[in-house]
Length: 98
Image (cartoon, rainbow, N blue to C red; front, side, top):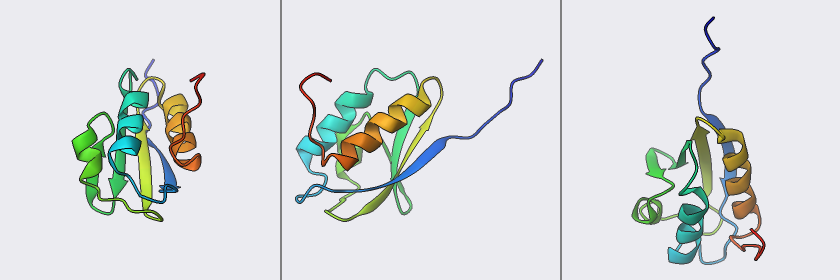
C-alpha cells in the first residue's frame, strides 16, 4: 500500500520584532529547528532560507512588518511549524522552560 504524498506545510507570518530579523531572532529560529527531523525553510518573495542557517536567514533582510512564509516538510513538520510560528508571534521572545 502506498502512502499519500503531501507537499510541505506552510504558514504566513509577520516579523513582529521592532528591529526585524537581526542576529538574535535568526539565531533563535536556527536553534529552535536545529534538531528537527524535518526540513524547515523561511521564504520572502523569491528568496528561500534554510531555517538552520543563520546567514541564510539574515540574507532575507526581513525588517519589522515583513511578511514571510514558514515552510516545513517531513517527520514532525506540523509540530515544528507551530513552534516557529509561535516564535514569530511572540516577537522572538523565548520561554525559559522551552
